[in-house]
Length: 332
Image 1 (spheres, rainbow, N blue to C red):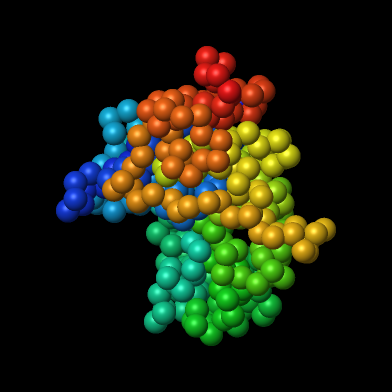
Image 2: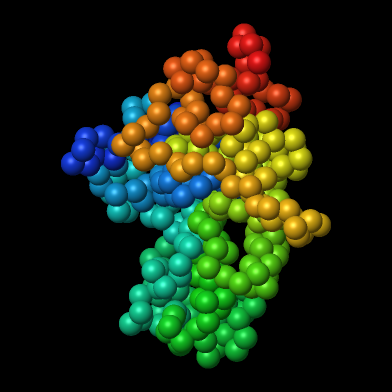
């Protein structure tokens, strides 16, 4: 099966007053149609920078390594995303074949333009449909995501909607162009648990109906367990563990993944103390040598972790981890 999108050797640095700062380091993954991939990690892990690269949306001070490749497979043929330069060419990955749901809809909706006019504008930008037809589709999509009285809501402003309704409206806008790939950047973080569950169920239904691929970005492994088919765990710009979601959650191999799971509240033992991952994620300006997690790792092997970058090794045919604990040549 041809992958919907392939990311190979993605390395992204940013020009700053302090010099080049590495945000993403040699990341590779692929996603098929109808597949949901969870991208998990703390704030500062590089998840959003990776996701924005799929739409060539990172700031102008971003520097991509020569080896970095992002290939989107469309019906018209493969598209090398990082080679797209003009606004005309970029339309295929910005609202065309790829759409993005952001964590805070108010940062994405223009406050002085109605939700409907914003949806209509993007539909007319990405197709040759009339304004009347674009409005009909906008009302239809608002209805599909469960917004009541969509014919009235389409003429409202974002600030007139509740947080859950704004998030649904943003999903409707992202889906109105029928993208092949949907990037969801922490779409449930600002919502209460009831609305969270509704949004998760909605996204599952949309995958089944439209057979799109989804990259679901979050720091919450509990959400990923309900949503994703596979999971990739990021730490300080590197992918450190990846595999089928149930396998990774039931049998985590990297100490960081184990720490993230241990930090989740245990509903079957309400007296159990929370056990957060010790320490803080280092600043990208002070990137550790060797394994980037060694400064917080409870199972560090010594100098090998401080000086040698671990390679990805398979622990079974579909589950890989980048950790010296699982390298045969390194004594445990």
